[in-house]
Image 1 (cartoon, rainbow, N blue to C red):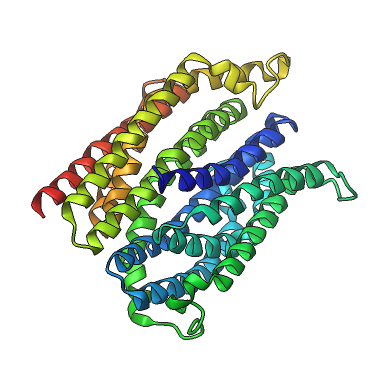
Image 2 (image 1 turned 30 degrees about the vertical axis):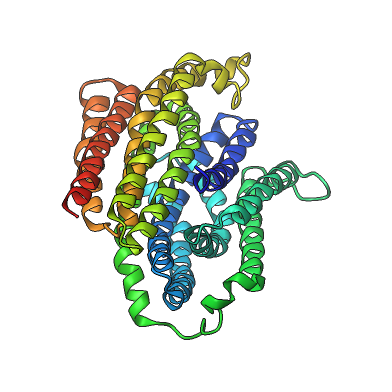
Length: 436
């Protein structure tokens, strides 16, 4: 909990950027909300795949830290920064062709136009965001996460200010509407990275790792190791988020009302998900450090403790979604406005289902984190593909369009995919520890 608390707070700060964006864009109306839903879908799917690859810095550093291998720590971080630079070029190209992707997926032209404008602005923040992730993974892996938390919290306040200034044309800034929130996010990502870079550069405790002494010289061995561990992590995250992306796309086939309601419910679920995600990241560090010390009992205890804490928290949030859905929706939309009535009705139904998958979502992400701490990433990638595509996506499509359950059917598909992953990943961690 000591390690997880600041990591969880950092995760909540990161998702707060998207939460603030959604809340403030909601004041522009359902059409703008639908546009940012599509834009965020492309952005976060691209971002999470890249972020997943860079998350390999965490277990590489944590195991080296447990083994007291300073040279390996520095090499791992340096290659993480190189990887961030390369991935940012690829991601920038994808984001600036988001309109082509959405058009190919059958979205309406007005929604595509709004989403493309948003993506064009936020794409400039991809490099600093990925650089921040590489440095953050290092700092958390050596059990010093508090500075990252402070930077992220300040970024939330900066995001609110920039959103207000750029969306509505305050303080002498131009009124950019939906596009303004994209530029605001880019500004925050850049600020966070520069501050964290300066901290790592000047921190005397990190001097022994010589992170920046040979930054201009790529290390092929560590770069390949980073990619070997990180690619399955990125693929697993990409597979999972593609389930949610395709759900958004299928919601778009149903109409703007369903799409806007889905964005509200999913934003709420994503916000609470940051807590078990942070717990999973802390679990990965604890497991990795135990593995580096060759302490198999400590690795097992750390993993199952993380899973248990995640279950407890997500059970409480599930209860909140179930009991107070209209209060939650009121954060995004005016409940008294007639133009919002249809969206509110659908969002309330979806929040009830969000309560169901909260618990299994918490289990799967904590179990995945525990496995990453052991550098076990390939089999979890296969489990993710089977669970999210083979079960979740197929079930959601059939229930929604073949059996006529509409948006509710799509969400039951999400539940089935997450539940399958939770069971298989937990079983995997148990078997690996039992065999050690």
